Image (cartoon, rainbow, N blue to C red; front, side, top):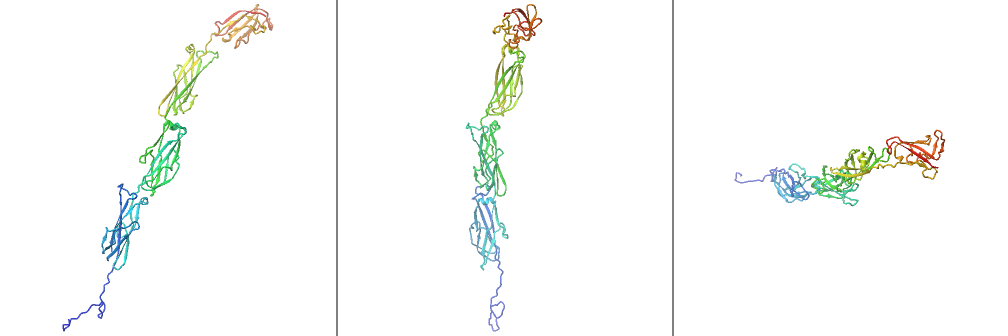
Length: 501
């Protein structure tokens, strides 16, 4: 106010008393935005693991870290469509409820074991400046991608089935026939498996390796053929397990032992074969041994027995033995450790038996033997064989001395005939003329048939009788002597002999 009461005024100027420009104070503007992205698996089926077509729910918290208000705030995500917004945030404000997104899990995600990505928050300040930020998983100050772990549960299962080919059509598997095995392998886990193979200690498996997606099953790739052995038939069945193996995406290997009809169990595959039919047969033969060569059976002479035992069943027999209860018999050989089906053993067992007087009186030896064997299960089988050995009879020898000969070459009474002399022991014959002169002498008169080494009316040149001279008609005298107890009843016979020419 002037002295004269006049009021004066002036608008300020920032730098001059002559101007009236407003004073402008520049304030620092620092627009800044930040974003946190988190993901939670929605375990719809409640199995504790993420499965294909289940979801991940993403939540987004956006922060205004600057000193100016941000408007038109939006969130974009290359993985999902983000719902919500745009919004405005004052400096220092945040929003964790506006923006959401849902992601559907794929098999590729599970095979990877996680879902990884980042979203971007964008906003504009009052001056039109646009700011943005890549999301972090737990901090507004960092920009690490959000990783949602997905549980991996690699698993594999195998079914093995055996079917007899029954080449001969008898309804069961025999030795040399085949069993065709088929294998069904399934990926029972939630990740893909590669390098899937099947191994079997019993057979060489053909086929593979293959890859299986989660839940995929293959029943055609793997096969095997097995040839039935006698050991299998003896057992009555074939039992074993195969193994399936596969590799998970993380390199872990999974395996499973086969089951016969279920992916959930691990029972061995049992293929029944022909029903066990143990059986045995025995043949026995006996042969009389005429040790003294007299054509008759004598006390102490022997009978040799032979045995042929045959496995007539379809399973192997073990510890095959033969029992023979004939008193005095000596059984040799055995046991037969192993006798295969169809096999005959005719050399292991023999027996020798000494003939008794009772046997000679009976005229025969009757003998029963029993063969016994057991199969792998301990089942015992037996077979009997009876043989009758007829003993040669000791025939009453006919013994007769004829005291007349007519040595004229007509084939009748041409020699001094002693019927049956060959049936007895060593002998000596002497013939004398009527003057007591020895005209013939020999040992072993009659030979082996009674017709050899005989007197035919010819002198042997003893004393005064010329050798090889025909003796005249007349009466002669003979002496027959047996040198052992094997004689017709006495050791010496004598009498007259008449030659008629």
